[in-house]
Image 1 (cartoon, one colour):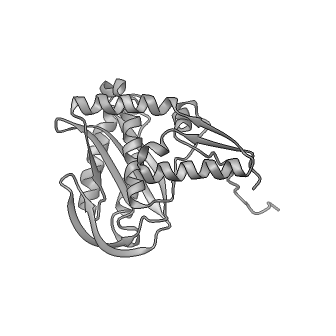
Image 2: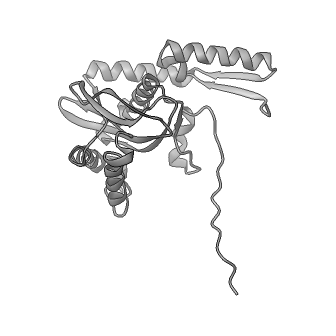
Length: 239
C-alpha cells in the first residue's frame, strides 16, 4: 500500500531456489496490484563472472561466530591486517584508526560474550592461507535458542545459547579487502557470500546502512529498498 513500483535486484534470486521462488511470487503479486515492476540482471551477470574467476584462482571463504573474547581478539587482529592493505587503511580512514579501532574492538567483545553472545558474523576471503578480505556485521531481534551451530574454518559444531538468526535483522558494520585483489571484485564476492549465509540462517532483512557518500554508491547495487532516516537530538530550552 502506498507504493507504485517494485524493483528487484538480480542478486536475490541468484542466492538459492527459495529466494528465487520468493522474488518470482513477489513480482506476481506486484503485477496483480497494478504496480510497475523492474528487474536488474546486469549486475548479476558481472557477479557470476567474478565468482568464477575467484574460484579458478583458489579463493575460499571462512565463516566465524566468535563466542569468547579470545576468539573476538584473534578475528579482529585478522581484520586489522586486511584493513592495513586496503584503500581505507592506506588513506588512514579505516577501522585501524582511533577512535574507530577501539569502538569496533569493544563491539566485537560485546557481540561475543554476555547477552549478545553469538550475534557477530565475520567472514574472510582467503587465498593460499592469507586473508584478502573480510566482512563483519551483527544480528538483532532474534529469539533465544540453544542448539549446535556450525562455525569456524573447519566447520566445527558447538552448542551455545544465543539469539536465533531466524527472523532477525542483520546490520552490516565493516568490510574491506586487499587492494592488490581489487580487480577480482572481492568486496562484491564477500557481500554475495554473506547473503548466502544469512539466507541459510533465515535472517529476514539485511540493513546495509545506506549513505549519501559517493564512496558508498556500491550499496545501491545490492539494495531493493532505500529507507530515509532522520536523527533528532532534543535539548532542553535554554533560559
